[in-house]
Length: 251
Image (cartoon, rainbow, N blue to C red; front, top):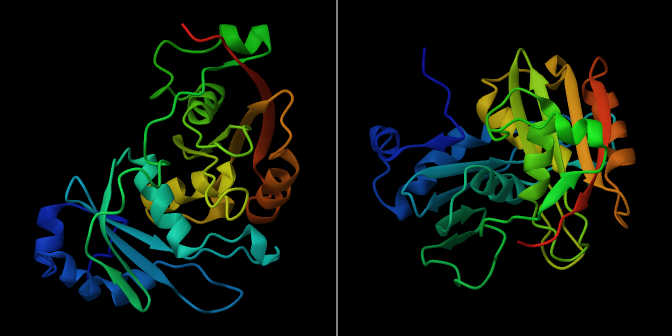
């Protein structure tokens, strides 16, 4: 049985599929499209990128049956989130339908791959006291969601937010990624679902059992309502909680 293509390929894994240079990315396109989830349009789309680590990252379109298309994740958004969630610094080449980029993108844009530190802390003292010493890898959703919010790229709305999901004991996280000014932003739930798809070994969204959203007290852009709608539709049994945070002073 042929092994399913993964969302991140090492150099060795890519070479085993005949990909040794950027122009070979097209060899993976058809196989990558199978990973898309498009129950509404039936159109599967895939984008492939070569990162500065020499790993190959995949992005696919994701649609959520029963929800308007503005909840969907485009293949390009998936790719960018996949890069950001794995702390890649640069995208050197990108294969998208009808266009192929071989050169590095300008170093000053996009800045969303630059690590962020939004200096957020839980506003609820009880929640703050529960934060672990290593919130990057602990199993508590509140810790992981706050850590994700601190990595948000929210340069336009100034409303960082983060989400942590749990499925069979594994935690998946995502954060708000804004691009093109106030348009075409990716919400934290969608970003967490990118992580879920990339590392969840094909599990269905309905298997997600818990979710935590962390966002600012006075956020002009709140993710809570849309997060509830999305999670209720795709994971009806998911226990969803919301916690507020605030920005702390710079050291």
